[in-house]
Amino acid sequence: MFSRIEKEYRKELIDLYERYIANPEDEDVRKDAGGMGIICGPQFSEDVNLAAHKADWMSIGKLSVEEAKEILQKLKAAREHEKN
Image 1 (cartoon, rainbow, N blue to C red):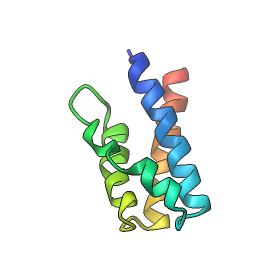
Image 2: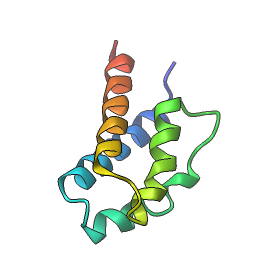
Image 3: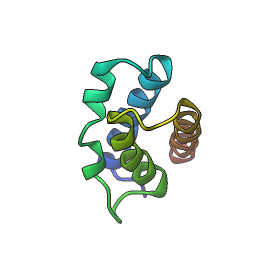
């Protein structure tokens, strides 16, 4: 069963990654990404943990757009799975 918190967090991460892919140089996106990696742990699924961890990389400009696209695909696939 997917928790409500995980669903909300996944939604926030999807929004963040979509904004980053659209404009990786946007300082507001990088600021929003800062600190999101702290919300990781065994209570969350693999896609959420990966996206949260890599959000810290995003905040310092070390995440490539290609890697961000791959992570976004995983987040969206998990979101579709939770709907079923």
